[in-house]
Image 1 (cartoon, rainbow, N blue to C red):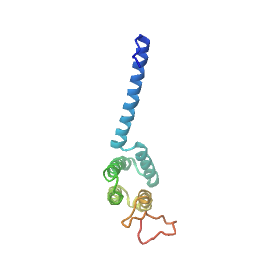
Image 2 (cartoon, rainbow, N blue to C red):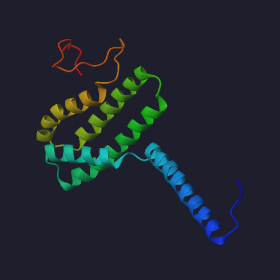
Image 3 (cartoon, one colour):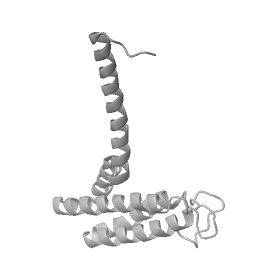
Image 4 (spheres, rainbow, N blue to C red):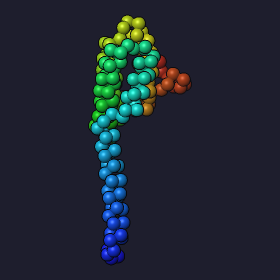
Length: 153
């Protein structure tokens, strides 16, 4: 295939090349952002979920934003670091959730802490249910006939 010699053909190929480069650079940039920056949708959903259920004030919401953002970054790092080792993902996730629970509990009033216990169990259940436990079994939901309430969440 020979390179076109007319100006309009060259311009056409140049524009096509620029478009292709922009597309590839955009995809690479998005993958980088997804790997480095916590997904805002998840962060905003968690903020809305906790803020609404616990009826947080403005100061608590400001602190919550920092805690949730930090938690999302740690979550992403755990996924990247332990990608092929599910038991280590579970252990690191347990530690991350404990840290999240402690930090969030510190900014709540005693009444909010009471509500937070049930909310935290729901968060924990949703985060851990697909990860294997020490025996290699996935976590069971209370509605599952094989659920063992003595193991907890």
